[in-house]
Image (cartoon, rainbow, N blue to C red; front, side, top):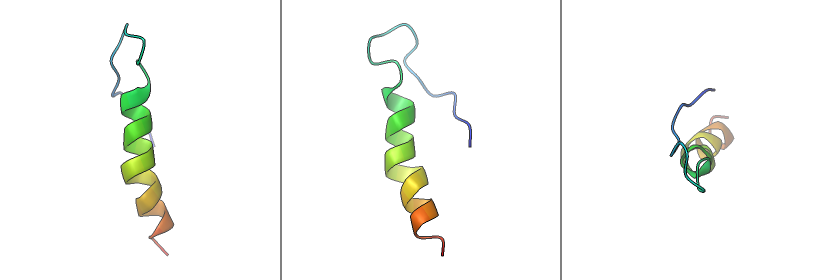
Length: 33
């Protein structure tokens, strides 16, 4: 998985990617089986 979502140059730069990972990707993988 790769995402280019970020708020570049801001203190919270990585939070958009972490939000997508925690709230969309991980639940989808966990419920896939």
